[in-house]
Image 1 (spheres, one colour):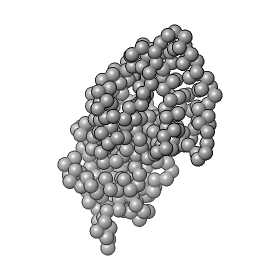
Image 2 (image 1 turned 60 degrees about the vertical axis):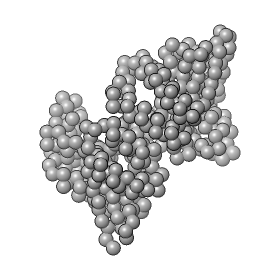
Image 3 (image 1 turned 90 degrees about the vertical axis):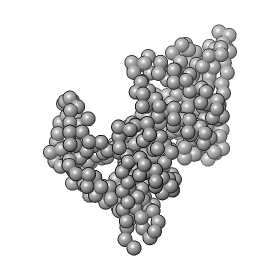
Image 4 (image 1 turned 45 degrees about the horizontal axis):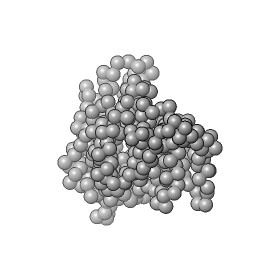
Length: 354
């Protein structure tokens, strides 16, 4: 039997086939941001981007799936992924034939939208995504580019904790504890799985998240209303599923640092961790980062820590594995590619390439 491609455009059409998408994404062990619950939350909180998806059927079974986004500006289609920078997604294909048919279906669907187009999909696996390879074979004008790798600690059997907590990290944490003790500050550390408690903590978490970002960079991701709503909804939904592990560090009764971790594919994925600007003298962030590794290492269901984001000094402590990522670009014509790269190179105003 031949392969059949099913295209769904719009969130309601995708909802109607939710179970099919969910089965494929679960089968390939997609990251949480690339599974149906996380994708749905992003689609619901970002209505400016029209979601669309593709299912490939073979012998009355679905064997491949993808959910992407589109919007049109000045007649130009922009094709992307649901999710922000750093939110990994995966093309779902159960075998290489299905991957080839999925790539063919994506190419046909984008062509059928009509008019010029650009594809820009970040946070893809590298180099092990066969759908990306097939897409590049289908598109005359395309390229991939490696992104900064994701730092991870991958716990080996029978390894000691000190393999993943360097002596410098342990020393820095010890000094922080000593300073707290010397100054008579009461410290309380707690890991929380109870969804009710986690949801109740979110206003304090958001406050420190935003204030620390403003202190460091003058702005925060959650200054964007849609990004804040997505974060709250994502954490709330996955907390209710029992997949959120929150570390809190209180100093003299005040929240001084936190880490929101997602239990994802047998790892503690650190979604966000921040220290309060009011308590930096006592290095609660250093204590929190040390405790994340210790907690995950002692959890029999966790086999590592995914620090998320790009490499930073504290994420490179211990025996770190840098997991490569890539971004896929494609253009409908040489002219569109030239204009896109020209704007990127000279930073022209974002008129046509919104």
